[in-house]
Amino acid sequence: MIKLIITSLIWAFSFSFIGNYIVGKMDLYLAIFIRFLFALLVFLPFLSFKRLTRERIILTTLIGFIQVGIMYICYFESFKYLTVIEVALFTVVTPLYVSMLGNFIEKKVNLFQFVNVLLVLLGSGIIKWGSISSNFFLGFLLIQGANISFALGQVLYKRFIKDDDQKTTFSFFYIGALIPLSFLVFKYSRIELSSISMLQWGVLIWLGVIASGLGYYLWNSGAKKVGYQTLAVMNNLVIPMAILVNLLVWNTDVNWSTFLVGSSILITGTFLQCRNH
Image 1 (cartoon, rainbow, N blue to C red):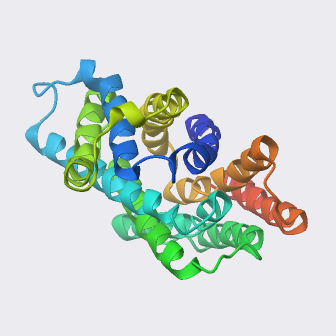
Image 2: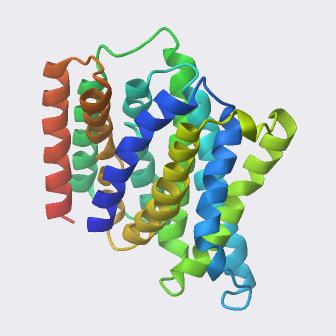
């Protein structure tokens, strides 16, 4: 549980860093590629084809392809149409995808836990109210593509990846993530590293080494220690955190009444979910 909370705090800063220093200031696909190349470099020393079975290597690579590669393509594209706060808020249905996919795999349904997930969705929806731009539908669809990919990757990792040798597993996870990103960056991007400022390099290092390298490792390994419903709820904890970071650091305007009410409901749902896990 503590791993999920730590990761949520780390990711809360990522929304603002991407929105304020990356989007509109450098090629998005190149930024994604560099970010996860840094993440791969963190785990590259642990790369080994002998420690894992061929099936596990293929499965882990596929999970990285879905959870990171496909997810971040949709995620970064959404910043073209949405504000930082809107991107954070439109992830509100990720818990529902996690819950549904987890229940489908385990072939069981816990009605009380499902109600808690809906409570969290309600709280996040209240926070979102009044923050919709004219590009809502396109941005929302892109975010849902990201949400489904992220949820599916979590559920597959939790269900099928064993606890042994997680560091070696994650080297293949990031190889999988880089497959679709490599295709896009070499096909559509102009690779001009000299145009990247020192500040942007610093942000990319943070996003790659900390938010991705450390973040995904903590999140997926932490996901294996909790139930699907608790994991579903934790997916939304980052939303109020990300908004607060954006407010406190960049002084973004927000409807405080809806934010506080929605956050209170979200936190209550998180507490009830964890207590009844």
